[in-house]
Image 1 (cartoon, helix red, strand yellow):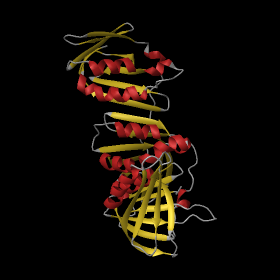
Image 2 (cartoon, one colour):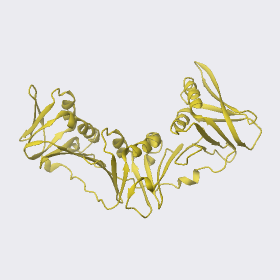
Image 3 (tube, one colour):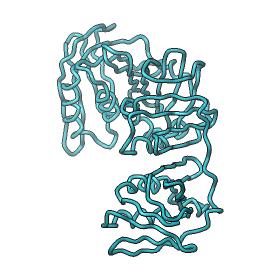
Image 4 (tube, helix red, strand yellow):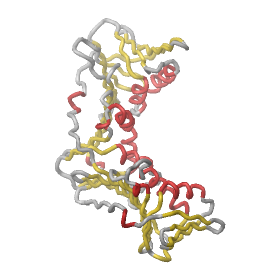
Length: 375
């Protein structure tokens, strides 16, 4: 194998490769990635057996061939390679990297030892605008990160496709986010109901890929999902657990409903955040006779912070003052992800029958809802 390639066309792909290759594994071959030069195309591939990544680049090929290269070391060399063009060739089990002023070698291994590149079916697909899909995922991504610690089996995105709608749901059991959009926004040949749980790993890698085409194609199979970004492909096994009927936890009735200005409450929450302790608790005090709420945080060292934020009460079913506590980070994140001037908050008061969740959403649109359990 002997090729010449621009460093900048390779670096983004090798960055993904370096993340995919496992840092700790009993199968040492997975620390390597496969590089294949054939038909004026360079194909690079890596896997940790759960998620796989393949990228294709056009390049100048003098000799075709394939080789297995240690991912971490190749990535570090590429990061510090200061010339624009890099010449790559192998002689036996040694990889040679050349520039006009640079010469490096790396040990490789036989490509026969490497896992097969998984195949995927294009029978069932969704085509969606990449920017739109990114925006949707970023709104609900926070739940995945905490789920990986609190409830690892839910560390993913639940995709539910029905006749007219597509829903994307994440939860860490403390909060739940749902994005709902009409099938009109996508191109698909899926007519029947489909449900699958997409793992955190492929979602994280997809969001980290910088240069994306306009459209993303998603191929669905019973135990695998594929993200096709034209010159880059991510494949992953789907999670096999049965996702709970999350719609049962979406509250329909509330003790208190009010509307609050998004910017005003976020500004107050930022100040309250200075005063939180390790528990990250914020108290929300509501007086049904007043048109404001109090946001209260306390810290043994700094003291206390109280912010009054104006609200518009829509309904309340009692006269007594109400105090309810939340994790301040979770409350802030839910409000930040709603892009409307006013925020709807439907609150249920904890009782002897247990704690009920709070619903946060835009009063104008139903495409995104955020459900948060009080502390």
